[in-house]
Length: 102
Image (cartoon, rainbow, N blue to C red):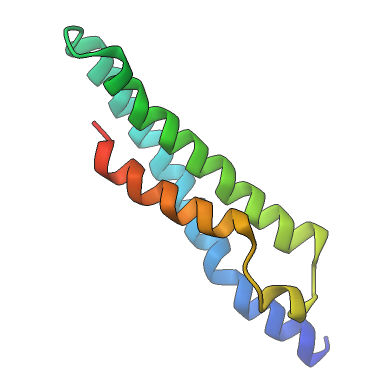
């Protein structure tokens, strides 16, 4: 294995593990939101759905980022050195999702 491939593997390992743990927590959050929707039926629908929509968008963007770096541009160090627009949107979306989650 070349030095460049080892560098790529060490750089992408953290985001991969973080995304997988995040997707597990997304499942827990979805279950929690389902129980919240069933319990508090008097809350506004827009408020109840906003957190779920943002969480779903964040999970989808995280998977897209991993697909971009791990599949489309595998072992290309120059691609890893720059962020995509999806990365910025994903981080902003995660912050909003934390604020409005039930």
